Image 1: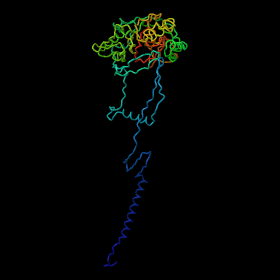
Image 2 (image 1 turned 30 degrees about the vertical axis):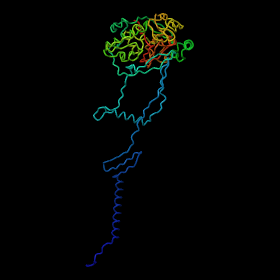
Image 3 (image 1 turned 90 degrees about the vertical axis):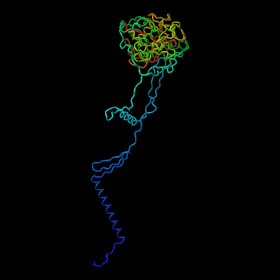
Image 4 (image 1 turned 60 degrees about the horizontal axis):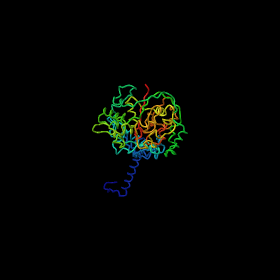
Amino acid sequence: MGLGTPVRRRSRDSGCQWLTIGMALGAGCSLVFFLMSYVIGFVEISGLENDAPTAVIEVGIVTAQVTSTLPPAAAQPIEPETDMETDGTTDASTDNSDVDSMASDEDVASATESVDAAAQPDDAGTVDDNAPTFTPSPTMLGSSAQNAPTALPEAGAGGEASDAASAPEIGTPVPLDSVPTEVPEIGSQADIPDTLQTIASPMVTIDSGTFTMGTTREEGLLAVDECINRDGGICSESYIQDATPAHQVTLDGFQIEIYEVSINQFITFLNELAANAPGVRADLIGCGGQPCALAQSEEPNSVIRYNQETQQYELVNPEFHTNHPANFVTWYGADAYCKSLGRRLPTEAEWERAARGPANSVYPWGPEWIPANANTSRSGTNGQGTEAVDAYIGGVNPYGLYNMAGNVSEWVLDFYLENYYSNPAASQPNPQGPPVGELRVARGGGWDNVPLFSRAVHRIAVDPKEPRASLGFRCAADTQ
């Protein structure tokens, strides 16, 4: 090209061609660079796993991870249904086999992790104050007449026992200093208050020996037939099954009180407790931290009254009730009273041996029922209430014991187990009953029971915190 030759400009079409070529080369170089980086591990791409989308981009040694998860499902509580049935001679039975709903394994694991996390120490090494805690509350008797049951019968006129009633709570029990921590030896006067010594019931000694305890099915069915056809009661074979089979029992000698403990004696005991713990309702928490009895403020039919001004216990209508048996007393109240005298509740075997007498009779006085000898719903007061502890002299047995049939049923030491008599332990010398249990045994039948309950062999299962209008006690002791 020579000088003076004009310069020709590129056309628009040739410029676009060069631009396209440049962009293609740039994209190709970028792709090659990215592929080389992926091959040598400089760039990593992760997909989705287990329904939790996770994107991970690693550049050098720095890693960023974002995970999306669903919150765990809340655990559902498991509440088994409980069916409880009781009658006059059978224990309460619980059936936990029927459960409406069950929590899944994942729910249980989630709930466990939540509780564990709440209980873990925080960064400072202290337990989270907001973590859920579970504090047990003791069951006590109610503190007002409105919360108390209007009646606590042991059994109806037909002989059917009432269902056990749960007592409302009044708060945490406070043990009293006056409750003995050890039972003093028989004859020791050191730990027995003079006020109680002077009114303690006399005792008789039952010699050691072997007797037949319990009854046969034949005798029991005869008693059921008499209950239905003679007494017009509603009785069944289930009432006598727990007293079978008859078995031989050997006992050491023991002592037992001639009379049932009177209401006046028990009120003296309550006032002894109150004197050692001023301002504390001994009837509610004074017997080993448990309720001793129902006073009138909790049970209108009780003849025990607490005077707020004097902080003393009083007997309602003393002209009539002084020598009547103590009733509306819990098992704990009966146990504590006996221990305060250096005595104890009789075992079930001891009570039955004493009631049957040396002839081993079904009734304290002999083999046949005599209505005039006992206070039951078919004789005596005809189901209207207690009578004096020294009443019914015709029913006194050869040992000199009063009211071992009728008037009030009596607490004994043993836990209740329906089939205990089939257990080899029941035939061991000096049987003590089952080692554990929820119910205690009562014996002898009360003023509101048909005569079936007054047989010396009859057993009644009672909640130890369920005092009744027709339930009292008497004390026993080892021989010196």
